[in-house]
Image (cartoon, rainbow, N blue to C red; front, side, top):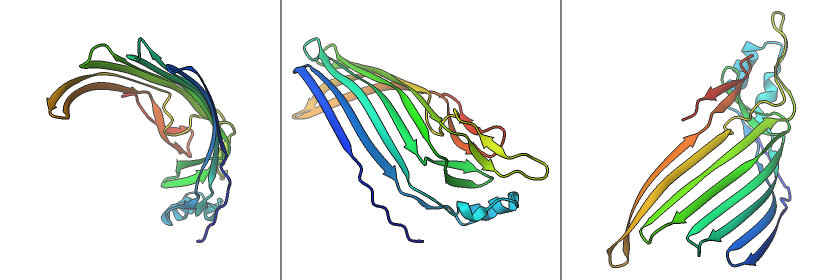
Length: 220
């Protein structure tokens, strides 16, 4: 298999800083992931499970392409002891690559998808030795078109993952918090003790070619 790829990936950024403690920005960026080949056994097993399907079409998968827009702010408050960073974003995928189980893992291009959300993080130094941090994110990531993932058979209709299904590994929300303690140790060495807590919302690992649609991981 031989594959070549040439594509221009534009990026642009505008920012405004009314003073040394505030920065506001708007960024547009693009990206892509190369296509590749699936494990030789996966298309073969697919053909056995779906005799009317075309296993050869899953031997390879193509590149996908991302366009992203982000609007954010970085602020230093209380003489720089309190830092607040925040951003909202919107991403759009073309020919998104995802993993679908059938029954072995196959990477496929499933068409267009989007994600949008909010990220906030804050850091507070309330003494020379103590600092706290807190933040979180909300994310909506979904397919924008339905996917027929298996052909119809004599005993079952075609199986479809509907538009609006959450993209695998896209967390709906997450939060973190913690504190750090600093103390001079020896010469230019500083002792740092850090305690942190993270909560990750539910997400799916991969799509399934069944009515269940996705394989879910609970919050932790």
